[in-house]
Image (cartoon, rainbow, N blue to C red; front, side, top):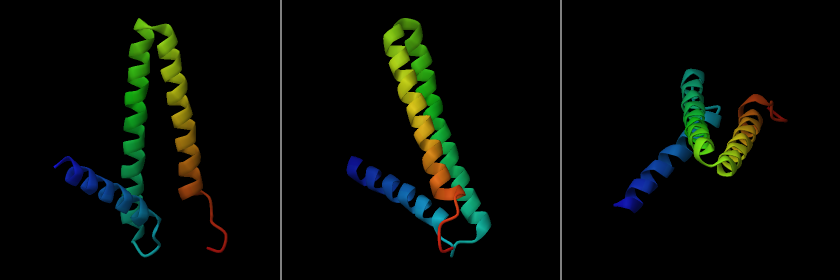
Length: 92
């Protein structure tokens, strides 16, 4: 059952990413899919930030480590989003 659930979620996630890149999909649908992807990424980073701030109150070293990881994930996510959706690709 776990495998089936994981397979369906992975298929939905990969399908969303690929559909949001496709030129054959209408523009409003692509923008909606890009918004869903961005909101999911923001939610994950928000949970990581909440966990790091909570850990910072109890254990300063662990909190700083988690905060550094969160900032790294945030920066890498912004770079990946920019490369995927905002930069014009050569030949298009």
